[in-house]
Image (cartoon, rainbow, N blue to C red; front, side, top):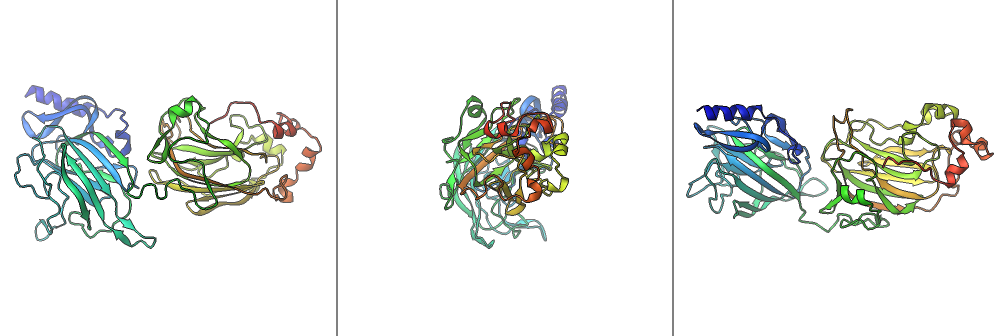
Length: 493
């Protein structure tokens, strides 16, 4: 008895340590971290844990909030989960909040129903008493192990399909479910949601949930891998008139120094950089340089993050900043900012006569975590436009002639260094993902020097063109030198 009590106390004193899969879930901090799980020797309806990391347990009584993925846009996925249940315990893996593969202590059941472990849970009604209104899909065989033993479940799920008008065109399907190495479900169509809310609205995408409030369960080694039944039809294939900068397979067309190879990977046609880096130098840069272009891409932030798209060289020296313009991709404000104007020293702005209403301003945007977003950037001459998820957030903004160079430059995708102690968290590795990176080159405008600028934004040009050194205005170097020769300084990239 004393040994059991000690184990219980140990379990509840252990804090969840850093684990890659832990970080993907909401409510993980409401579960308990452990290095191992086992049945309570004095009560088989409870689980206890040993010190360590890698395992999450939903408490002694199994009454903790369910784990919900931070990403809420999963469609077709393969899920691997290792779990342990106490005697009589009940849980489940639920897709989109609608479609459930049941987890239940089902050891020894000879004729399992859909309510047993591995079943596609049926529809139900709660009145007059809780009862099922269809048979769901029982597992082919009962592969359940005894309570207190680790088990595996591998689920391949295909999301429902909808047309552009929002009408469902195909039901969700469990393509395959493998329990402890045995195929128990295969190509099972799921027309409705499970349980009592079976008529709830369905969606083409959603989170993944591991139920945590119906009895003790321990989980470990949870892995989610996206797949696409329609793979290859659209991803990374450019629309007419555009060229793909990323082919979905390798980094052809991009510079690949050692840090890029270390911090970027490609998975299922998606370009990913999840790791933590302390120093700049892992940003992706195209080998080809571009002057006037339309750039379109999708980006996703697995957690709150910071990144950006760099293009065109800057003319003024901006201390602490790189030598290229940056369109910001950032959580909690800053999304869509043109960073040159935000980092420009106040003294430089004053001497160049920059007024506040001449700066680019965008509304506050906080991109939803775990969801794909689309940006479209148009740069021609010195005129810039930007769209975010189809909304125009900068409409033909005209750069000042002393701010941006008109010479071609690479396109660069920023890998941000770790962020400490601001509104992005105490230690944020700033993970970022990209796909569908397309570019269309535009013909140079008729006035490449001015780019169609108004007289207001051209007003400092005569003094500069006449030979007045920029060093006289901001204590750095001449404008002519900066146009012809990029600054030699450390890039924040």
